[in-house]
Amino acid sequence: MMTKQLIARLMVATALTAAAATGTAFAQQDAALAGAAKAGTATNDEAITSKIKASLADQKQIGVTTADGVVTLSGTVASTDVGTKAIQVASAVPGVKEVKSELTVASK
Image (cartoon, rainbow, N blue to C red; front, side):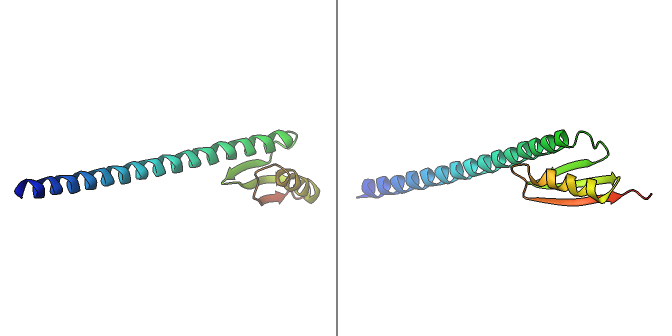
């Protein structure tokens, strides 16, 4: 009788250990996937920034930063038309969720 109880307890302990290991493995996998998603976002942000800067190559005074698909344009432009055009160019790039303008118009 004692042997059966011992075997039963060992089986329960083994099952619990396996369940704990599986839970840990899932947690590690989730963390790895989250890290990969974050890295993918950073790479995508860099690509967005590069595309916008290339499109605005003639407007070197406009700074471009991107975080999670949100683009921020900064700097001083010659006119509101130049600023509007820069916002339109940035908005047209795939992956851009929003464009924030911190552009100022130079005084004449």
